[in-house]
Structure formats: C-alpha cells, structure tokens
Image (cartoon, rainbow, N blue to C red):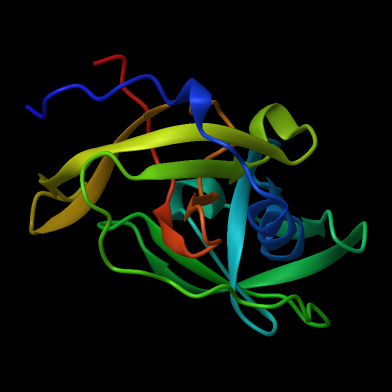
Length: 181
C-alpha cells in the first residue's frame, strides 16, 4: 500500500489546465441496440480525429457519440481499437479537430493534479487530485500487468476515460477506477 498524501483541496486549477480540458477532454456516450443499455464516460483527444477512452466505456456499444465542451458539438464515433485487458479504447471521430495535449510518463509522489471529465453525464468538471505514487496491477484478464498512478481525489461514474492532468496541462493518464482506500 502507498502512504497517504495531504488532501488535494488546496490544488489551484489554472486557466491553462482549464483550457486544455475544454479543448481536449470530451464526453463519450454509447447505446447498445441489442440490449437497449447506455453508457456515459469521458475521453481525451490523442490526435486530430482520435480519442482515447476506457474499453469499459465503449464495450458492447452499437452507437458511440463524442461531445466537445470547446465547440459544443456532438459527433458520431467509430471504435478502431479495443484492449479490454488494459481497459483502453481508441475512437475515430470524423471532423474532430481538437488539439491533443502532451503526455508525460511519470509523476512523483505529492504531485498536484486535476481530474478532468464528465461525471454523471453532466458538464465538464475539474477536480483537485494529488499523486500518491505508482503501483503495478494485474490486467483484467490476468495475463499481464500495467503501471497505474494512484491519487487522492474524487472520481465519479462518468469520469472513466477522462484525463488526469498535471498543472501544466499534460496528461498523466486516463482515469479508470476509484477505491475508498
């Protein structure tokens, strides 16, 4: 287990981070024609017309749409890559020209961060976070492992697939789960 860190309530979210989130974090909505279910999540632009999200957000979807806070548009999307073991999916979103923020590979313990996403299907929300450290976890299939950032901060349903941003607006990773401990 990782030692606790100070409450992130004093993390200052700059206009730079807010702009990156508005420009590059999108809402992902899905519906399944087979069972009539729907799912809401978030995603991050990784290149023009491409969005990364969690596989669990789009698995089984018959229809996928992506909404952007930046231009208040909604576009149809097509799943082009799905990795359930690592909970990653890539969507092709024709006409989406939002910029892709840079990614950084590591954040030391105590790094201030921001959770950017669309919890509950609502508007874009930015929440304070603080990195506790990195751990290695087994993938969902039990055949491998991945390194994840563990942080203190609020993650709600709908944040899945959204960005964990550092205070420079770089992506530290995709938000995919929460735990009370």
